[in-house]
Amino acid sequence: MVVPRHVLGRGFLAPSDRLTIASVGVGGKGGDDINHFAKSGKADIAYLCDVDDRRAENTVKAFPKAKYYKDWREMFEKESKNFDAVSVSTPDHMHAVIAMAAMQRGKHVYVQKPMTHDIWEARKLTEAAKKYKVVTQMGNQGSSGDGVRQLREWYDAGVIGDVDKVYIFTNRPIWPQGIPWPSEKPPVPKGLDWDLWLGTAPQVDYVDKLIPASWRGWADYGTGALGDLGCHLMEAPFSVLGIKYALDCQASVTSVFTDWSKRGYFPKSFPPSSHATLTFPKGTKTKGPVTMHWMDGGIKPERPEELGPDEVFGDGNSGILFVGTKGKMMASEYAANPRLLPLSRNQEVKVKQTYARVPGSADGHYAQWVEGAIAGYGNKELSSPFELAGPLTEAILMANLAIRAADTPKPRANGRGMDYPGSNMKLLWDHENMRVTNLDEVNQFVKREYRQGWSMGGV
Image (tube, rainbow, N blue to C red; front, side, top):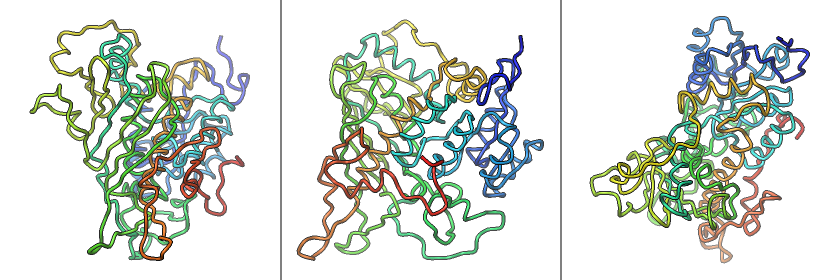
């Protein structure tokens, strides 16, 4: 029997229904997300919203029946009774306020990675998904890939023993970092609502090159290399080892010198490269604590001795290395192309498939959410619901806390120069209260102050 939607109540769909989606941020990656939802064959793209008409143009043309809005708040106010779910693909600093507003209206949400800009936001969205009983998914497609499931099967079978160390590396950022804020003040391009683009961020004049992607390197909007690729690379260790919330973190960063013995201080910009080390308590699948190393800006760990001198480490640009008591395994970005080390083991070791594959692998991540939303809250397993994506995002953002601490100067007591106390400390994390206990200056980044007029739904 087909049950009418209104009988099921807010946020619930009859099993025979299709999913009607409103998308916020529809250029670039947002447009790609929308195309994937449409290709599922079970979604209707009904509403499009973007602050930049230039970026939205191609998607608007591709979905001519969809109604277009500039301000997502207006779209929610006028149309929320007409859609079931929301896709959010904006710069990081706007993820939380949009997703929270959607969930408070009973809408299922798909949010691009990282889930949020701040740790506090990640915690609140995780709680809200459970409170409002909506189907959620973060846009880290690798969590739906075959690669991470193969890694889990090898590990569960004891092929590499117990893991206590993981190394992750990437060549990101591929945009400028460790630079001063631009001094030029060009006119705002036609079609862009700059005030709406800023949203929760501080009021500043328009500058070139933030849009479409260089905002990632600026701390008011993005979350650096960790925010860009952390979710694609750290998800596998979380999934394989059953780790969750970190205990502590420390970091070292590249020093940028602007003159002889004069270190530059660019608080708005992330450093060009960094190395952060997170400690996790015993995971559900480990015998003890786990140490995770994150390296960006082209920094790589020492090549494993089991890897031949001419064999590619990871995929050359990015990689994940699990170090176990009986062996090692590695993978590329998205946990793709998993391999045991030495590579000859891949021909010798065979284990039973124990984890169901997502149809379409990583590309099936989108359809999985669409089908999950149609099925309703709690009725279908998803690869990256907020209950999993939230802790992962918090760990990524905690590493950013250590990076920012290491790059923040403090005047010396004698008035001669600056020290960088955070660069010589391990930040101790109070998970329950969401604060660093031994360097209070860095807690300002756990929960930033929104610009006047913006809030996260009264939370």
